[in-house]
Image (cartoon, rainbow, N blue to C red):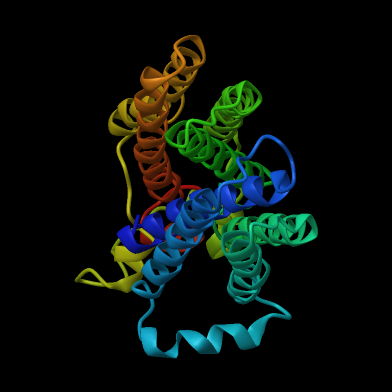
Length: 312
């Protein structure tokens, strides 16, 4: 599949934003978050800012962005429509939570829990946009929503511990929780890669053409003399020699470095922890962008069987 920049930015930034909002919402009313009104302003503002940038980026992948509003009408059958509805629905309790917290100093726990719940549903719907696609076998798996949720939780935890450090309110509980989410997300990503590497093809040229009974099927001539939309969007391929190094880069930036920075931030509190937690969040974000590029680039669409691909 063609890894469009707009979709990569959309899935990455929205995951961080809603992951951060989930944690702030879930921890509202606890001693793990500072009572500072400015923390509410910057924390919830950052969460919605990242989510909004991601949602806006997604419209650039549409043929006619001004008609994006029509996607909301297909909620009965479309995960894209459900994702749009829940992403906007999350804004209401989140904005109310942040507004009341900032202007009155009161933290309404149930608003935080509602925002957290809707954030999880939004991330799940985003993942199901891809996991529901049977023509892309390597996406049609429970590994996809699991990884989307774990990466959103990890990136949200990294962002939260960075914010807490900036407000001189670092919590060992949050730091160790971030440490645990990095390990969980890394295991989930490695598990997904192992699965797609070992998974058996679900379709072949023989099954796609229905000519398998006659023997081996091979392409004699391409359906088109020039590149078309299907070849450009669905037929993008990545050499395995490039996929391997890119996976290592993703593992290093998304998991290894944030893990090391987080551990050092726990061991060296104060000003060093501020720099280390910010580095952890930044490295994790870059690593997720690389990981998300691979997620799209390594996928194969069944339509490529009619363009010379032997199996998907």
